[in-house]
Amino acid sequence: MADEEPSKQELASERTDWARVRTALANQRTFAAWIRTGLAGVAFGFAALRLLQDVDPAWLAAAVGAAPLLLGLAALLLGARSYRATEQRIHADRPLLRFDPLGALASLFALVALAAYVLFALR
Image (cartoon, rainbow, N blue to C red; front, side, top):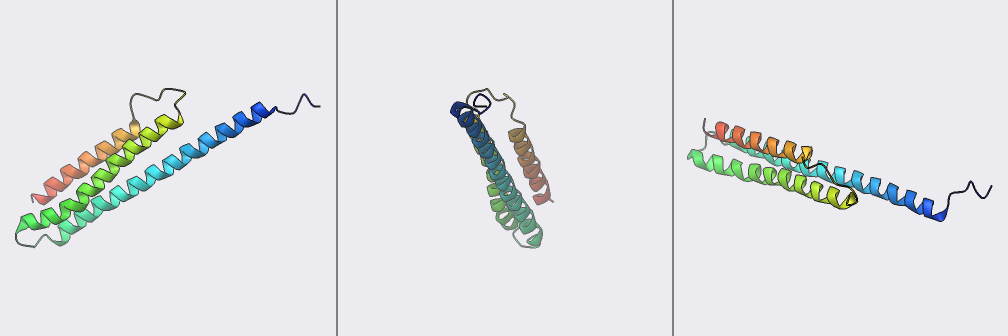
């Protein structure tokens, strides 16, 4: 019967594995918060541009809308960078993929939002 009980070493290893899983999930939740913050900034930038479209001079409306949009884009990119760095620390014992799909997605979204803003502001 004593042979069937897990050793202290096995229990410690299992606890460590579960702690790693919890930390990875917390990192994902934090990344989701960065994404929400970034999207809110981008949305606020577009809303400001839309609400101020009749303001003269036009560059003022574009500048007021650009500030939250750029902060939102920065939040997207910083969130992706932070997520990747934390993932590397969590999984230091094994190499991560060279291609970072979440970072690429955040970068792509940032480029599309910036391009849309430029096109919308130039109308």
